[in-house]
Image 1: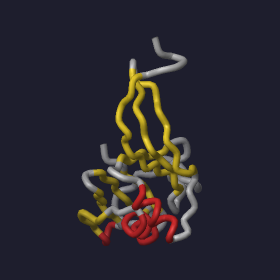
Image 2 (image 1 turned 60 degrees about the vertical axis):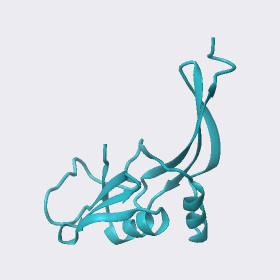
Image 3 (image 1 turned 135 degrees about the vertical axis):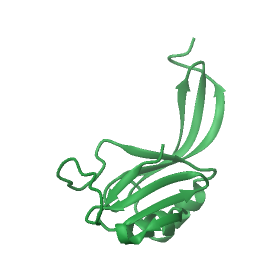
Length: 140
């Protein structure tokens, strides 16, 4: 699944996604205010709200966009993204944490953080820590 995010300023969004989070433009259509981004097979599409062409807006857009959703992007290592955001003085919405979630008879671990991007979408970068046997409440 590749999410397409409506954005108010494509250039500002590209500075965030490409400049800070390590994505690259796979292809774009500047005349349509559109860019398709990729980072090691993780992809996202951006479309400027006021750009010409199709309109996907179903209701009045108010900031923050994307209320009630966060986009989890699995990466090999969250450290380079954290360092880039820190160097830019970009605040984190949720600080780096290590969490283990129950998944059947095991637990799956992640190192993750959340950042709020210019239009308000929450982006969760997540690094897989593998599986371990489940212990504690909820396990047989």
